[in-house]
Length: 402
Image 1 (cartoon, one colour):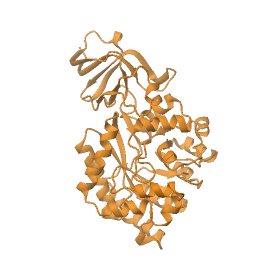
Image 2 (tube, rainbow, N blue to C red):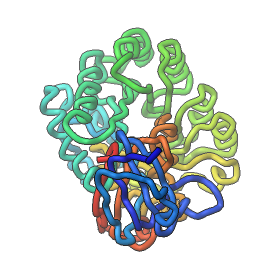
Image 3 (spheres, rainbow, N blue to C red):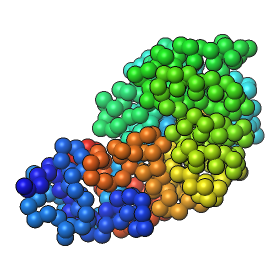
Image 4 (tube, rainbow, N blue to C red):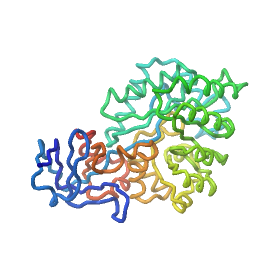
């Protein structure tokens, strides 16, 4: 029986990003076929079945093809900006000092609470469009700037609407444990009660996962344990902002709960790396925040490598610490600031980013049966995607075979 497909791309340089001995999982002179939105065949063009029938054939003329990029940590939905705090930091104030003075996350909370859902969607679309223009086909979007049941749910609804407005897959994360709102300043445990008892139950069906900010200016390990227990009770996987500004072993807590990922990780140590490796928890590196805040302690990449912890890379797009809407630039920063190899950086924005979202069965590599999400690039080899700065060589973007 003939292999009938909707689209067939031929004569490309395919970086499947499948793990193994072949760098980038490369197939020179390769072809990819899609049927019903999924990858039906991948291999060398010369090995195509003789009886393949395609409704449309597209010659790639040697262009590079990768999986569609995956931005696995963003805060795209918010209102306002914090350019004033950028000035303050450059005049000597620290991120922690700004937060303690009423700036930081709570400043964005005030602006976001004042915005309606349509305004949140409109603002987020401008940021999302910049990511899509660089080949992103899947994006994670967190709440965390509402900090009340109604406002957190409004943010999650806005995030879900992004996937209706654009050809992109959206994974939503409840980040109600992002900061203590001003009305709970004297009762942070009371706010944790609200998160666990009301916000998490209400977010079931709107959130794909639960996150938190485990830090001296955020929530303690004890408080985050309560949040994770509530998430588990409602069948939601967890992830965690951990070890960004200090070492509290939040990453180890995340691993204890089988977290999808622990993110930032500048102050993680070997015990954290060991715990994450045992749990299969992905280390999501966020070089945009490291760069923007002028940090000097890089994540312990060598420890993660030594223990076999998967490494993902994301933009952390947010108004306060990483106003970055370029995953390609994040890949370059991961290489130049954290010394990832170009292969690690590209895997971090495809295969390992998919793992960090619990979506490895669906996206992240060019494999038969997965969603046909592809990026076609006007470059000669995969390393160029990490090597170049401020250069977007995207030729075409394919989502679900179209």
